[in-house]
Length: 421
Ligand code: UDX
Image (cartoon, rainbow, N blue to C red; front, top):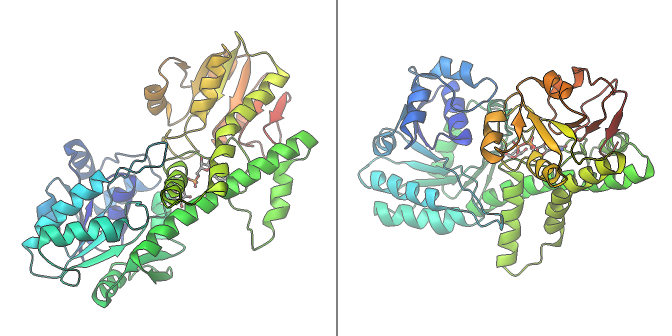
């Protein structure tokens, strides 16, 4: 099928490439000319495993990038909306990009005669597809739902594994209302063996928020249990392994550590809280998921301060990305940890194999070193904040190592302290 994908950020580009790898003819649309040029030159604008190889296999063959939204919509049967929905710390999400793109797609629909399906893939708070996107499409195209199709198909991609997750989803959520759209979406995903789950627009939106919020809840749960364990000299990882053997619980997302970051969990939990509060519902549990997460950096600093003086010390911060496998520092837990270290008048030397450039934009005032071993050699104390495997083979020369990610599976450094293990 001919498909257009509007927005070539991390979700849009992966969706476009993933659909092209499955034989569809895809045009990825972005208003950022540089990004469009990079994609057409097979240069990945983001760091994702397998993306470069996938671009080499598809660009110029059945994947193209363009700035011309109208033409891309006119020449395709399905258009995915994959633009950003940034949220403020109160969870209020900015839907202006979704609004703009919905209108532009509607203008193109106005001039089309054949049936066209619009798919919302951007993460939007429940009721957005029904109350914002649909009215805009009907108003600016002059057509009613049924003369065009609408589907809400939330993304379930993990950064660092985005292409793998797109190609092998546990389930494909398809929020839609009419049979014609259902048939077309089944064709879009016909080569995917994963189960398709059909529901309404708002249920599809809520499944995304509820899934992410539950995963975040598991992390804050094991971190709170971990803080109790640490005080009792119990290894939280042994506890979470035993707990995870219960198949109702599963061992996934029970890794205690410095907490969750990224562009999804903090944003999605905050957005669900905001929606609940807007409806006059107290969100006690979700509020505490965020509070536990916000407190973890302080718990870690209190542990370090109970073992050593920080003032005037050179502290190596190994790990800036919100998790290994990505260069993304959005909501990275390294940011509050570094700020607390600076408050203690420590001197920070930071290293990350991928995320250094991005962190420099957030915290320019600290020094950065592109060699992990050199960063250790220049420091008095070492902190591990991102689970990059390469950190576990460094020579720490008996310097105190404080690990917030439990990266040492076999041998731990001589002078070692784990956050909650
Ligand atoms: C998440 C969801 O996993 C994905 O399904 C959704 O589509 C987008 O949001 P992502 O944010 O990319 O994906 O990363 P994820 O691997 O889920 O990790 C999120 C954060 O939680 C990271 O900071 C990670 O370090 C942390 N984490 C994860 C833990 O602290 N403990 C865990 O056990 C798992």
